[in-house]
Image (cartoon, rainbow, N blue to C red; front, top):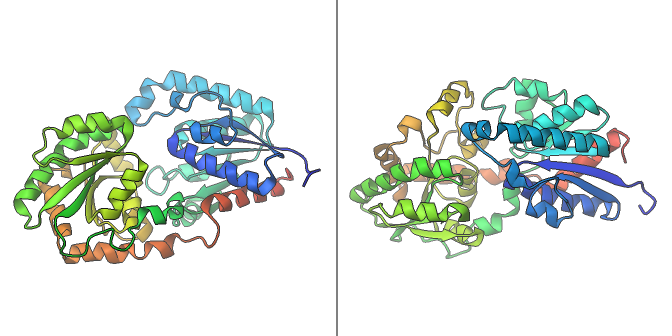
Length: 392
């Protein structure tokens, strides 16, 4: 290996979750090829920088979410795209890996493929082509050599839609089951009171602003209707904790608000039920074995997009299971009355609660990948693509 030629791999992520995936991939690539052989470039955050990346610019420059936010920052984002593409083409790396955030990373990949078609490109995290705009899948074949999927149903979806070659490498959550799941005695037994209820209003300011009101009102109704006393915990992301505290002051049911990842997982391990915004947290709760109700609201501008959605659910856990076991109350259905009605059966020993728990028991089998960690499997596919392109 000492006389093997150096390898330069560029990794471009667009937000914190991509930064975490990128850092683990970098670590696995160094273990596979040897850190002395590898050179990294690209765009990332603190996690990737700890693995040796010098980001072209701070990740915060492009880490924006939501239609209106992207429009407001579009000139700056386009400038960053051009700069990133120019730098990659000039560097002539052996591979480009783009991670999630397709509004940014896919524009980079398309331009790099046009100007430097010899550079292999891997996409880590599939856009949700199975949910809406399925025409993106065949278009990706022009600039993505291989796709690394986090969800087990995505390879079949891309094959059906004519997308690029796709490998399921595993969701990073399956590496963290010991943190997510309760140890013996950590979660209460059936019938124990008070019920531990989690409320998760989202990790974006727009989600918190739209959901905290109906969530608080739903808890008031739930307290009036339930024969089971309950206590509420909100695991808050740090940058929104103050806003969540402020909005929760008007709630009749006063929550305990915790911050930090360790406190979040501790709350998950104790929880009996949850009310959550749609997102990755639904998969976290499913893997933890916490029955839940999912809610979501978007702006009026974004509401028109619902007519383009083709998936049978917006809840990741439902999609992995292939059945809609988790109730989802979206937009105009996201009312305090409907939220309380859906939550009420989850506080007792009911068929609705049992159905979710039985379904969650299938997740391990559906998401398993064998002995490899997801980042190790991803690194193996990177090596295979490099070898197929005669880059190793």
